Length: 122
Image (spheres, one colour):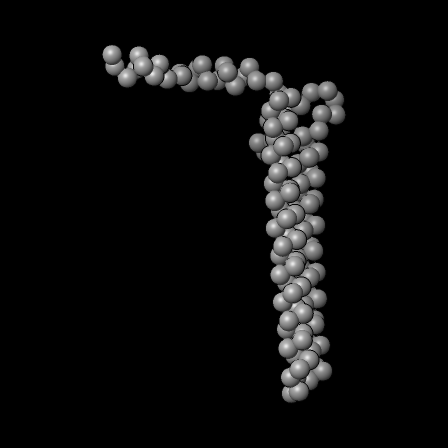
């Protein structure tokens, strides 16, 4: 007995294509939505963890600078400006990612009763 009879014939590319064509587009769209939701959740969790670390670092550095007598008010202002710029940048980054996710979600919505999975590959 050879290995081919034990394991069976490997699927041919034509059979694989026919199988994938047999899957309903709705099922593919549902899977894509679940994947997108998972990615969005992971992004939100990572973003929130990053915010916590940055805010804690800001508090630590601010407390440190408040205790050092030779740091001038001008130095504190420049540090605060840097912190504000960082917060604005991270908020802009998050807004851009959320916009991208909402556009993908719009592509996945079944507004006309049929979903076109070719839009997902764009």
